Amino acid sequence: MKIFHLFVAAIGLAVTTSCTLDKTDFEAEINKDVTEFFEFKEVTSFNSGPYKISVEALNGTLYKGYNEIRVKILNTQSQMLNNSEVTFLPIHTGSDNIATSCPHRHQLIYEEEGNYYSGYVVFTSISNAMENWNVYITFTDQYQTHNEKQFVTVKNQTNMNLNMTTFTGNDGVEYCIALVAPQKPKVAENELIAGIYKYNQSVTTIENYPDPSQFSYAEASDYTLLIDPRMPEPSMGNHSSPNNVDLTQHTDGLYHGVVNYTMTGNWTLNFIMMDPNGQVIKGTQVPSDFTPGIEGAKSELFIDILF
Image 1 (tube, rainbow, N blue to C red):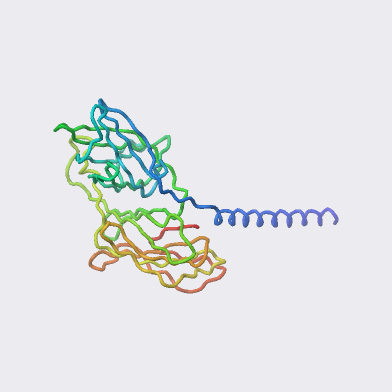
Image 2 (cartoon, rainbow, N blue to C red):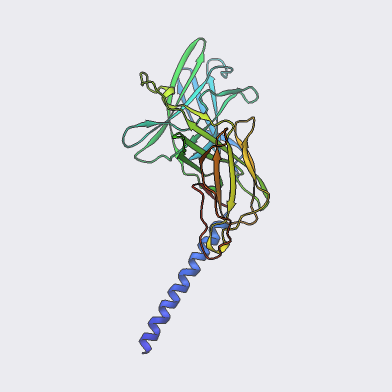
């Protein structure tokens, strides 16, 4: 009997310890410090003849999800290349050797202040031993076009506030939603910024690789992204928050709205995306019931965040 009591006590201690560890790990995760990046640093640089080409991103790192990029081109025999036509094409090659791309700005924009070419790329997967990313950069100088290819590494985005999702809409089109801001939300009303992109299926055959028409993406124009933020953890009862504003497109091409976080922790951004005609492309309404002890239901279209 004494042995039995010791056995039961040991099980109880193990369960208590396990629960405590789980709780501690969860608390540590939601309280971890989220670093905001504001400085552009070099991701990679390479030389081609008299030219040095440099690719920059925030923190000098390319992440899965939305990345603002800058390309600088220096003619080492003269000066920085300005007002050239510069294109940027990211190509992913998987273990099956099939080439795909991701949302990106193909024709980069020259920024006179800073003397660089700006764009963005939304990487949809990370680099690993079986798959890789290369960027194809073209530019023109002295009436001659140059084509360059460079391997880049894409890392996993550890900041869940910058998560993304890809899906096929009810219209049969491939879409991508990528969170752009805030990097570090506050317990308050936050401006929520996201990019929405769709894949333009090409009807041509590939003659020259890489053929940009095979990998063309466009910013989805004049859509609406309805938002219903909720805390799906059973202990949170799937509660939402007031004063949220649906996302609509602004002149920068991105979608802006407001999300009100009433406390730190696990949040789910439930979405319903509608096209310019008001037709639902993806997403379902989430029940508004308060369900303490039960994990909250999620929309057909959602992104999880954590802060």
